[in-house]
Image (cartoon, rainbow, N blue to C red; front, top):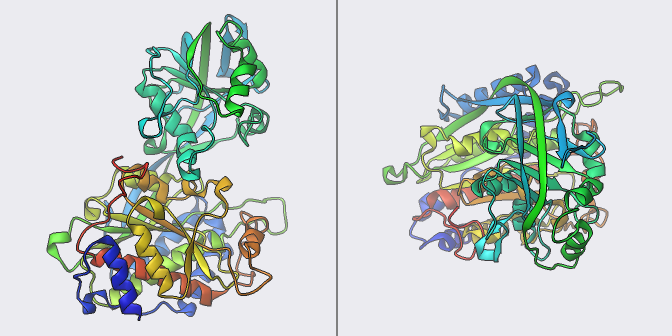
Amino acid sequence: MRNILICAAVLAVSACSVSQEAARPALDVTPGAIEAHIRFLADDLMEGREAGTRGYALATNYVEAQYRLIGLEPGGNEGYRAAVPLQTLTPLTEHAGLSIDGVAMTPGDDFVVSAHPVHDRSSVEAGAVFAGYGLVAPGLGLNDYDGLDLSGQIAVVLAGAPSGLPSDVAAHLSNPRTKAEFAARAGAAGVIVIPAEGLTRWSFRRLAPMAGRPSMTTAAAAAPEQIRVIASISDEAADLLFARAPQNFASVVEAARNGQALTGFDLNVAVAMSQGTARETIHDDNVVGVLPGADPALADEAVIVTAHLDHIGVCRPMEEDPICNGALDNASGISIMLETARALTAGPRPARPVGFIALAAEEKGLLGAAHIASNPPPALGRMAANVNLDMPVILYEFNDVIAFGAEHSNLGPVAEAAAASRGVRLSPDPIPEQSLFVRSDHYQFVRAGVPSLFLMTGFSSPDEADDEGRGFLGFLGGNYHQPGDDISQPLRFDQGAKFANINLAIIQAIANAPEAPRWNEDSFFAGR
């Protein structure tokens, strides 16, 4: 039965002409193997594996050693390593400035400016133009810059996206990097974002206290260099910004709340903005191993399997237990990736190559994924698909899985058949308000045009105490990003093995299909 179901998954990608020998599942992943990796990676000696630390470096050594034991070939730029150039950025308050028609605003109370990924000091003095949400998506009937002259001007946009969009599309369009890219293409030199009260979960009052903290980025994940200053302002500062405009700010917000289309216009004011940034360069590594494919004609179509290796380190330095070990986030995902690689290597060689990447700096903004998706080593070819493993919550028996990205490509039926082969069903996103589609590494591959899947343990369980999301949400509201995410939790390694074998079936089906995965024609992300 399992062979039939996997062949059905391949049928969803193309005609199922792969032989039964090639499509036969490799060795099953075992609970004990999952446990062994998690125990090592979540040990206190790893110090929480934060990006740029000794603990993360130790973890990369462990993953490379496992790749060698498994028999994967080096797939990085230097052996198994693919360096990720990271920067720690700190905004300098003394260089933060914003004035409207010569009236100086107060940093922290009226506005905050972001650290800049390129410029240590930069400024812009120009007119300001309101451009709705600042979005360009013709397929959705959105072009907020249509008819506006932004050349050298400051784009003023609302945070978030219009109501009524699919949650994953809305999350992508609301992404600050996406908005900055649209503004740059329209010719803008600066951007002001207004996180208006009642329009977004992250209002200015919630954002402002965090604005001065150091952040991390890499060039592939940064706003365009052309945008010299990016600021966020309070509703009160927005009132002043709109004082001479055809519409006042209150009416714009009211229209947005009512779901009305927003029309852009010149604000008829002069704005000056400035920023200063202190930066430190850090080099972490992605760790890349490759299982070569059996078909030379498909050698340039690697299936990419990813899991992030980092976590958040010594997160509670003043407490008795100061380390966030990240047993589930994401030692479990790395463990499943390693054992998937071992099982594939032990079985018949798949037609396509399969690349396995332990990713750096996911917790800092999906940075290792952003860099390698934009700068893939030659061994990864053109990257046919991505299967991402992030935070499988293996604390309960699960009856279903959620496959983020499933509706956007013909990987969806592959995932459904693979789950069914293990007696598990595929369910839609049960918590779209969490925007999980843009919060894991597969999103960076989607941005690079690669059909991608991210599987999450689902909300259904035969145990009433864990059913209807109680198992997953209990972790999300409890030990997630806390010292309690360690090996002392009642981890279900048998469920880790079940989850691994579902992903293994997905990877096999993709790697053995006659044709590479493709975006659905009606997908928002097709043709990126």
